[in-house]
Image 1 (cartoon, rainbow, N blue to C red):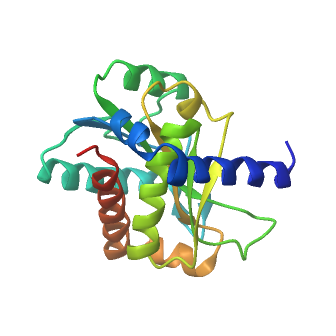
Image 2: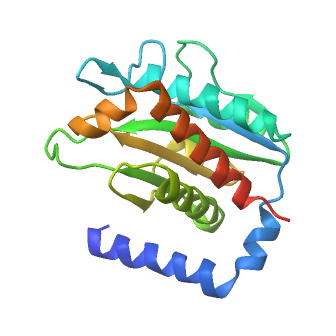
Length: 207
């Protein structure tokens, strides 16, 4: 699929949610549990730049998200709590066993060919994922200073495609971008990221 067509598809879904069926999608996002997926782990470190290792940053943010959600009365399930390797399909299977849930996967981005790339990205699959991704995107725009945020439709990511619940993979910043990378190394900034994820989840819940 070419980039232009991807953008057209993404724009179509945005218009559908904003103009066409917000109440329908809102009704579908009734949940009391959040499955929090810290990307990579164990033998899979993820991306490594400027001595910053994605798997460690992702787990730190995931734990902070869990703390924030529990303080708001949500139940949480973590796909990993330690530096352990979990297969992608296993993460999806775990999520599918949790009723009345949504799925949020935490990652950090990299682009060695374009070190100027920066910002956060909300990767989603399907209209329910888009609805959740929009709320997360708005929260990042408001609270996290990374330069920009964007919604990215993805069909081939296992944790999105195979998870039955509304699911979003959050790329919390580019470790290949010097400023993004430095910010993401700060405990205070990772807490800000976690707070934004919690805010986006709260905004997506049906009232």
